[in-house]
Image 1: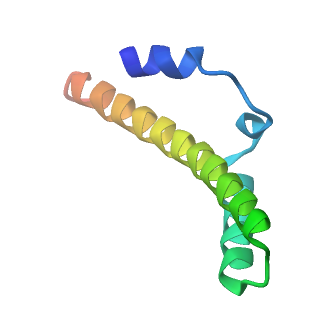
Image 2: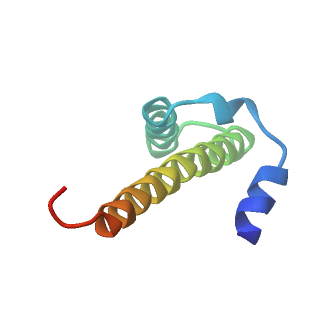
Length: 83
């Protein structure tokens, strides 16, 4: 619960409005650019930082999905037999 409170207290970024698929696709593009090379050190660092931000957005989506699945499974287990 303390982690949830810390996340809620964390400043929101424009990336927080991204859907999972959009953030994942943007992250894949960052990885592609880094793997292709040809960028300066400064550009590479900026891409890396962008990738880290996008990875966090994806992880938040995945964590939320896991929590929803866990809650649904727990509710299902709590239902009386026959439903």
